[in-house]
Length: 103
Image (cartoon, rainbow, N blue to C red; front, side, top):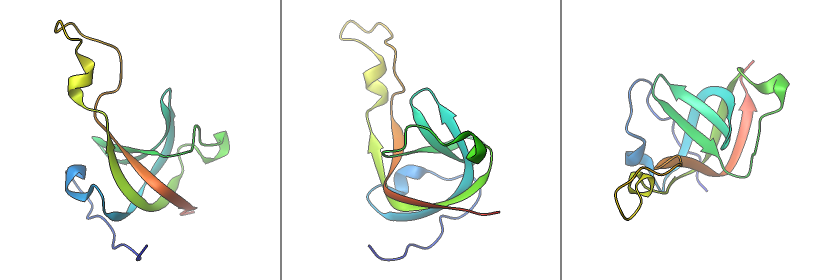
């Protein structure tokens, strides 16, 4: 995998980076569905293969590199009859991820 350039700061559409190597800067956090990197006010990505960040790493800044993938769909949140279903819908995952603390 070639060394990626950083994804520009600010509002971004992660869909533009699917299938590409990425370098993301953000803050580590845990959700019920797994470990995430919060990359902005409304952007976060899951870290493939990492169920949870250790407590001492939560809320700390990290640099994460890997290949960005899209999983599932918002359509998965509706059953065949149109009723709402539980789930997280479309979300982004960093595959083959490596991470480095920034402080």
